[in-house]
Image 1 (cartoon, rainbow, N blue to C red):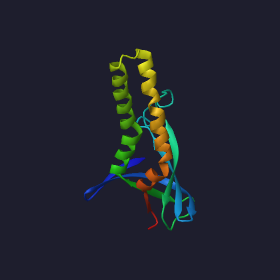
Image 2 (cartoon, rainbow, N blue to C red):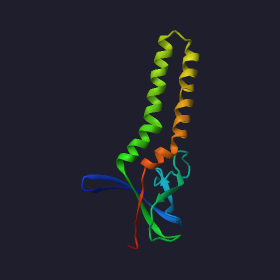
Image 3 (cartoon, rainbow, N blue to C red):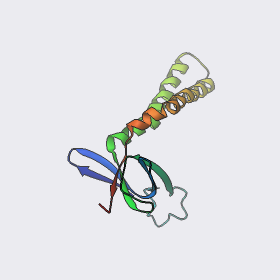
Image 4 (tube, one colour):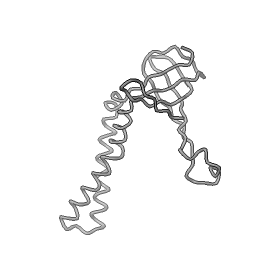
Length: 146
């Protein structure tokens, strides 16, 4: 379950999870993302509902052990950055390239295919820069035991 908490001027995003592994300067936490409609009475028959488990690696030394309940915390601005890199920039890249290819009098099908193909180098670049991007997305832990 995701919680948005206000702490002073900093907005944070937090998710409850369970420690899978702890040691070597990092903690591996399993969190369950639940869709907004998971509590609906029609959840079982609807194809839109769902849960997804994710493993989050939190770097740092924490006094936690496997099976312990913790809260994973991230700055809200980091969440916005992830949405920007993963969805907003690719969307505008496709739209702008579609406009450019159409204005150059390419056939519609070719314009559409080339606009989609522009995503290949974009996501390849993100993949190549993943370690650098990973360093910017920092998570911290809050343990219920102190």
